[in-house]
Length: 356
Ligand code: PHE
Image (cartoon, rainbow, N blue to C red; front, side, top):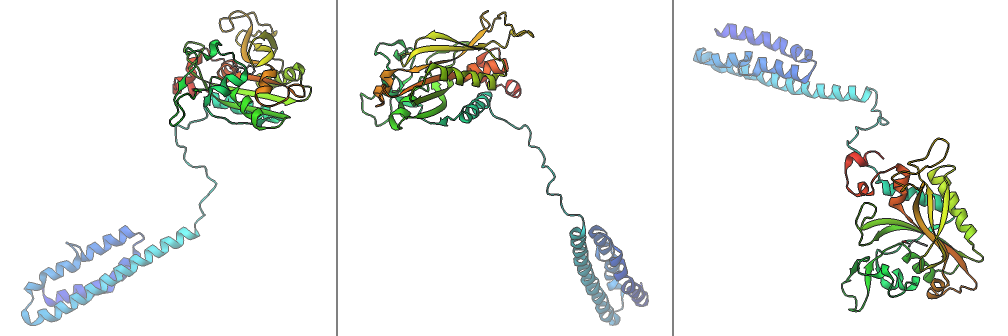
């Protein structure tokens, strides 16, 4: 290539590169255009490669011209790059704004509360709406609060090694008798020892016994409910039970009390609700495998608080009376959802848990 034709190519390039850059609509197009000029096989690169063939006396002048054009091209490329970015940003700002109300992408699989927690929360809501306040207490408890003050005789079978998990608490005296609470009735003792009557409390919680079969798990859940006031009678207890059954199990759910014995109540009763598994369209319950052919399922123990319990908590049984009940949450969940085997509740099988 002669120096005059090099000058021609340079002049043509100088006259056109700006328009070529400005015509590029995207960054990629701009970079491609730039590569056609300054890339390995670019037009200006081709000229640079020719420099050796130019007569020595003209080389310097031509070289300066080529370098001048190269700088112009480089500068224009940078400017166009910035202009494109600015235009893009401007377009983004002008475009319809993000819809911040669009729901996010779901993180699957989403968990939910365990059925025991679901029924616990519902029961707490119902009883709180009837005026009971929630009282908390420890799962590791003194024998005194779990048994003695509730009037358990020292030889009562429930206090036996067969039934309780006795634990050693670090730092406690050697003769301290401590266990995992076997029921939530320890909260009766704690609340009555620390509050002046009248009082109305519920206490949901985890409880432990050394049982393990189809209908007993060594770890289970109860909710205690008790009320202390003047002139409380069994009728108040029945009223709360009936209201609870209607709201939790549905209108028309039958409830029955059967006389029973607990050391801390007198009289005492066990409470059954109508079995949902064999309920017929006409409301009769002929009995089935789940309710042992009786048409009833036991869900709780209850009774009038024993004077001995009041005395051990410093409350005068001549002035005050009250009722207490302790409900098994697993039992209630089984009845509510028609769960055929209580053990399913603690096997953590997602195919089971996903159904709630
Ligand atoms: N604590 C008893 C139990 O676990 C239930 C109960 C509570 C009975 C309150 C009467 C009154 O079996």
